[in-house]
Image 1 (cartoon, rainbow, N blue to C red):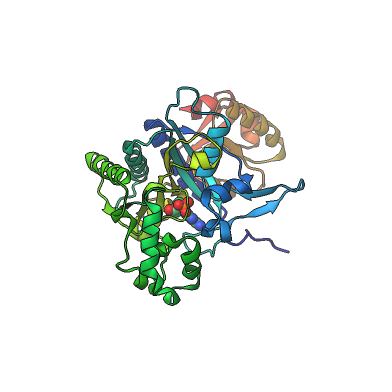
Image 2 (spheres, rainbow, N blue to C red; image 1 turned 90 degrees about the vertical axis):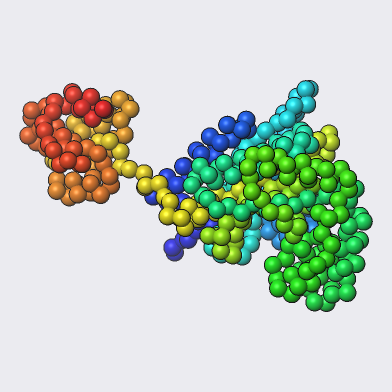
Length: 418
Ligand code: AMP
């Protein structure tokens, strides 16, 4: 029996890991610059957390969660998105303290959704996410977008398309949803099966459907952004002015409603044409009711989730790639059993001196060992054969220049350190 990775998941192999580390390091760096601190939450949560926050009638909760009972009969769900766990931890550990300050968090975490896999869409993907909890200030909505763009810029990803919208608040919804239902009602039979259900449970999401027939029906229907309460309209205006103040170009796209129920006011998505069908690089928005819905004091917040795989796919399309990790500093090529024992001690000395080193464990001729060390990218090879053993030396070869000289074993660490 040969096993394979589960459908929709991928191994990140050593040659690719350099790209991942690069993307993660740059995200940490940008987050620090903006005052966000890392949080790590468990890979699973109580199922109820996602049902309550993401929403019972969303695609994620209805069709995509990985949910199971543990041996104690508790229903658990693998992280289906990053905001709810961060908010749960914010409440549970009272991260705001007495002062009620803004708490800025970021995370790098796997997200699990049972979806039809295709290029750029996986059942386990990874998100770089950030949350600013504790203020309604529109400057924070703009800051989240600015931070996301700063990360992509660090990664060399240019050509991002920023689309923003306002999905309003509890004040704006009843009258607007009535209007929207009225506008769509006549054409109900023309909608796809999913949207016919959405009409009953989550009518706004019909705007987001990619099916041709649904797009046609929703052409010209009223949009929330044109029917905001005065407070939401003023907030949206401020977000726009803040974006303009920091020189971020954006479009208002009234169809952006996002697949999660907790959004209020600002919703945004950033796409990139190099991605093809699954073109979202990241998205997010404001969630002023979420902390309360999760059992905390009423507290506003805003955040985003950015796909790491998607960012790397764009880098690939743009021809950007950090080199595969190199082999290290010094490889010990060993000839003969006698030399082996000495090589083990020398290798340990090098590593204790902080030098990335390894030795040959699979025999073979000296020529074969040198060839392999070269293709694995080692900078130096220290050859230890019978002659060297007798003289207490190694033959040190610089792989770049091909230059060789004999050095005392006691000097090896110093010789290759520089
Ligand atoms: P969401 O939590 O759905 O707003 O997703 C945030 C970002 O994560 C998206 O904009 C994508 O970049 C990425 N993403 C979402 N779902 C997937 C998936 N199934 N596979 C790969 N990336 C994804």
